[in-house]
Image (tube, rainbow, N blue to C red; front, side, top):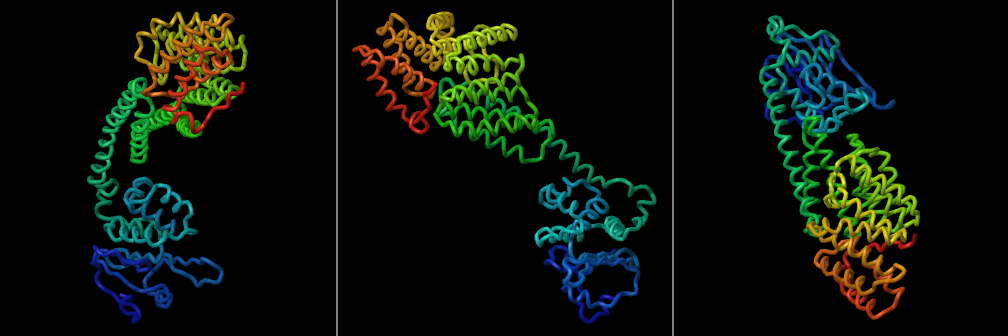
Length: 506
């Protein structure tokens, strides 16, 4: 053989278990494998062999010497394939001709990302693989069987692949049985993803069920851990259907964390979570979820004191929701309350009417649904928001009316926060009406605060201070009783008030 006759080249039997360093050339044929270990200058000095060869030379710069990319020779009993450097051309030939696999399968075989394989093939001869990648390709080349090596050589040589006995008999037209079995096994593994998605979804629903009784301080770490678990699942191989489910779950959990962050007074963090949730929901085109996220962004802006933004975000959500069930929350919790703060009584009327009509259309029932839920708002929850909106708009009679209508459902509910919030709204209306009932207002205010002293949230904190502002405008001994209690309660709840105090304008 010509290589053996060259004094500059050392030839030895290869050890298939030993990976070669970068720059070592591979000689593969049907006979026992032979490795030729020499640097590129030596290769350029070799005399041209007498065998018919296809030589590929490339420049990297105008001044750099010519380099060999690969050498293919037909020898007795098979093909000689020498790869001096791996480029996108050789990678594509290896994948499409020798192995006959997809870019994803090639990436998994190499242990790299599909994006890397795609980039190599797109760049073709203009990209040279680095040492780590080239060594992985060396290993693939070393493991090719005779037929695969022949196809690889033919692809680089630009000639039809040689016809072996197995191909002549029709066997080579198909994949090896082991390849099909392996692929089938991967598909079978995907079936387990349904169970994973079901489990993660159940875990999220359990978390939401416990939110009213345990609050964000206890449950936020659980939500974070669950969100990270979903993210890890998304980075593994998944069926498109399962990816859709996991992405929807990821968006919901980010939205839940955004909602929790608002109730802890972490408005900047809430915005980031909502932004993340919105991007994911947009990728999977889940308009109902997008509408819910807009409602949470409106909720955040409301407690930041940015009522115009709150109204605007609610309107964006309504556009997404249309006449769907999420519009009930957007009209009542978002638009009506923001317009109430802006003093738009007619706007509040219209928003409350729309919310009530939609609740009737969707048959949400009279119950007090949880505040943090992806389900549509029930009548009692919608009316609790209406009471708040009319309080801000100065329509105290309507606040009393809605408060009275939902009193039964509030008392039956496990939601301590809802009872406290409605109690604070009614207390504030009692203190602001033309003939204030300060005694009853103080009683309701202190009762509301004492019920939430062990798990305060931002919404209760803010309403409690709004009631405090109303008492300060009408100095009296009774007012001092509430204000003293409020100071003690606020000191214990400092974690939800100190970081980001809202703008009370508007």
